[in-house]
Image (tube, rainbow, N blue to C red):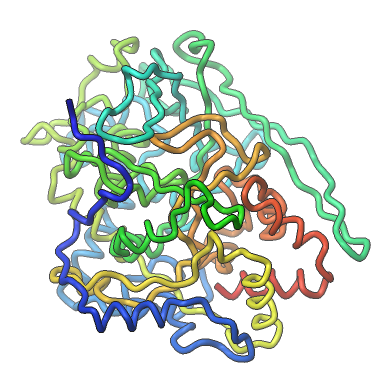
Amino acid sequence: MPQVLRANDLTDIHLSVVPRTAQEQSRISMVTTPTSDFSSPEKFEAMQAGAATVRARKNANAFSQPSANISFEKELDFKVGNGLFKKLWVSSPSSTLASDGLGPLFNARSCQRCHIKDGRGHTPEGTEDGATSLFLRVSIPGTPDDAIAEIDGYIATLPEPTYGQQLQDFSIAGHAAEYRLDVTYETVTVPLSEGETATLRRPTYRAADLGYGPMHPDAMLSPRIAPQMIGLGLIEAIPAADILASADPDDANGDGISGRPNIAMSKEFGQPMLGRFGLKAGAATIRDQSAQAFAGDIGISSSLYPAGWGECTDAQDACQNAPHGEAPDGLEIEDTGLDLVTFYSRNLAVPERRAIDDAQVLRGKQVFYETGCTACHTPKFVTHRLTDRPEQSFQLIWPYSDLLLHDMGEGLADNRPEHRATGQEWRTPPLWGIGMTETVSGHTQFLHDGRARSLLEAILWHGGEAQPARDTVTQMPKDDRAALIKFLESL
């Protein structure tokens, strides 16, 4: 019988850690305690990513800078990783052996095509606009025998028999794409205090023009939009114990908030680990997440996902038997390349805060804290002291996330489990950089599928554990609501 791993057993095997002293731990506890003084900014508050924080650029490159504390030598690795992140892959056979292996089914030809300028993806704007940075995950319910026995509370799912775990809307020549994403919206009006209103758009998703026959009748679809890429290395360096300290799965303190950790089976380390990345915290490390994206999004094999056909299923035999990449080791991206993309992703820097001493921003911060938003959006952490990652080592950071799963209500539910996450649970997204979304991405679309067209709409979609805070926002004086948005825009 495999040993069952419970949340309290999780450790940071992916990090080379220098243990904290008792004195350091005491100082960290004091520094990370949420403030109750909103008369002025906190010390170091502008430096959201500690010494890795960069100047806030006023153009679309604001999310594409390396950690400010990166060495000159490592900046070269960052730039080479950036080149691989942007590289356009081509189908096989090709004379460019270092770039062939695309697909045969794929969502994009490069990482950058989804994470444009390392920012957020966008929803299709009309029938002529593609859905490159928005796709559907898919699975069917499993049985208890299909669960990963080592993970306590794992909810078993299986790949959809024909289409796998992700629908690809592009294909190389001679192969049919799996589907076309069809999105329609229903408008919902929400009354606010002092005569104001907001209009939400409720999406309905359909997998149209299926290229390989009908789906399983129990198929569960989940829309996923490409998230911003900044600060990932710092999130990876937060002690698991500090994340787990906020978990309260049974709401023992009675505050209505019951955050839970997700646990993912790491391909990199071959064992269950704390989930940190992805909209449901379904990936344990940046390298895990990167390799999964290469396989699922682009159809590129790696040592973690060695199948040359990417996500093609046994039902798609022509796809599995198509020509694949001709790299000498049989992998379409070798470990050196995967490591460089991982390093690049780990060191995309968080910009500094803006207008932190503005009176309206300070009032908005107070509203954010007193409304209860920090129950999930934990303001501060201190990262591990690390022997081999100086850029992320022992930094006071302000991600405004507990990185735990929370029930967000039926309105945001995708009804598709992922590891331990239920169909109504989502990982609390970090808020740093959220106020620069329009600068980087040219839009203000938020949440897991981009349905919210503003920060206020994103708040108004909150339900479940966040329903009381959401209702408070609808009922508060409109000046406080405006100040709250101003604070979020400063992050």
